[in-house]
Image (cartoon, rainbow, N blue to C red; front, side):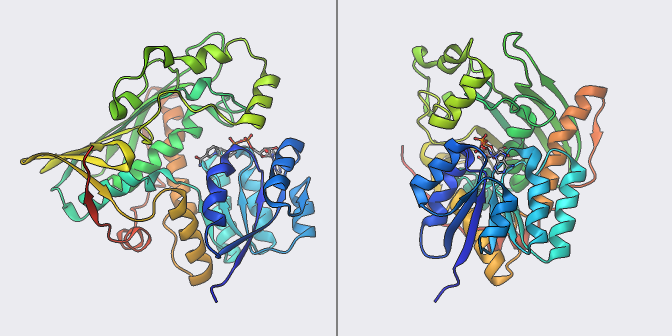
Length: 396
Ligand SMILES: NC(=O)c1ccc[n+]([C@@H]2O[C@H](COP(=O)([O-])OP(=O)(O)OC[C@H]3O[C@@H](n4cnc5c(N)ncnc54)[C@H](O)[C@@H]3O)[C@@H](O)[C@H]2O)c1
């Protein structure tokens, strides 16, 4: 019989929603307990699992038996909780971003190594179906040399219900919260290592303070051209690139609804109802990716598919097989039970965080920031984690 990994959850907020599905699919994991100081989150866990629930991580480690933890608390707590877990001999899957500082992330990586335990980061956007498809088609120069890759994301991020610290660049902001997703995607797709970042951040709304946008230019070792944008100010949305024009009444709905809400009521809204999904969001594609290669261009299509533009015209293709959080949960299981090297490990999280923080540094100094923690993606590990994907024909 397959080994069952007993897993506990620390922090049962919004991020856990898409993770519990893959954790409870099949018989590889058993969710055994949770720790969360918030009674609403604790009640939600009890209603779903009816398993022991504790107020603090310390009580959890003392009171329950398990092999691994999934840490989904506010990011500023990731380091101390992960190190506590390694001290107790547990494997760790931590939410993105890995932490709020490079030093903290490095301490997490060192603690995992010392304990001989797995550290993985839930960097699930690099394994969205359309991104896996782009990886499949471009790896080993499948479309000739990759000349440029762009990630542009215009969203309602800044105007969805947010916990108090989420907009604050000290511990959150769009650079840490969403940049972590944008750079995760690029890390898988770029053919060479990023060496420099130049960027600016935006705090544009006097009535709602915080970091709501960034624009960045990344230099790669082989000259690949890379631009990265996340604009969470909720006017134009890149969803229109994927699913066509949104209904005019649906644009900026989140923005109007949250205007004038108090921090407390916003926090409560998020706890009880989660984020409202952006109206009109129908394609199921997260942001917009455009890759230009010698032999063709790629961009997302609805339903996880992609459009390939080449000398024969335009063709819809869709990568078959696991995608998203299901890949991450599978990867974590194999890393624990088979010693299988994880792709989205601590060093992946550290590299992504370095790119995010470089935008802030560059915004401060006006200079390009030189990167030192990138390390090439191990193509063999990527291949073992993602497999060889069959590309099925896609018709809209
Ligand atoms: N992978 C993704 O797509 C994704 C999506 C959303 C958030 N996140 C990440 O997940 C993390 C949590 O974000 P969120 O939006 O779910 O926040 P949230 O505020 O909805 O949930 C955090 C939970 O942690 C609990 N918590 C706070 N302090 C704790 C402690 N000391 N011990 C145990 N639990 C504690 C809170 O009570 C809450 O229930 C962040 O790092 C965020 O960047 C990832």
